[in-house]
Length: 111
Length: 113
Image 1: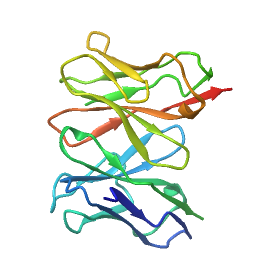
Image 2: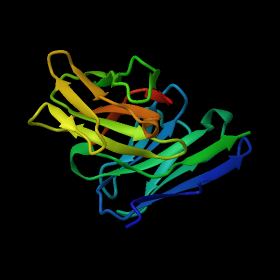
Image 3: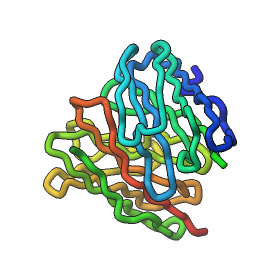
Image 4: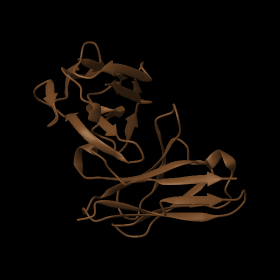
């Protein structure tokens, strides 16, 4: 039981490049989330998926897209990376009561 | 709309001393409350949660938090901290009818030997 896994762990991009962050969970949770963490700002929700086949915008969705590929997988895509997207990205999944289980994170630097 | 305020961004405390990390929330409905801990270069882990029932909840490593509805607070306490408690702590609130959680900005607990 791996919990929530994320790939890659680290990534450096140049401005304008694109990339996809992958997330998978093996806990049979319905809900999945993408957050970004920046110093002094806590966690901010980018997108979430309450169930397979649905996605919704969170607090800071601009510049990102998501795909809920199946119940296990939820990917985050940066179409044209910008320096403001330099951050640590966390994926999480949730059963009932909104208790969230987090992955180890992806550290992204955009030059 | 719901929000969470963690007024202290950093809390230094000597080893074996008590500590309190403050959390206040605002919400128009009844809520679920959580404390998460983040060790360096790791993801967040659930420390404890309040869903209903007893307003005092405890974790397995000696932390406790008390839900105070009148003061809309959920402060985290530990009577005697250890070096291994050095981490960042996040308070979070959710509305049971939604699938979203709102996090505070975090409090870094630094335990001094």
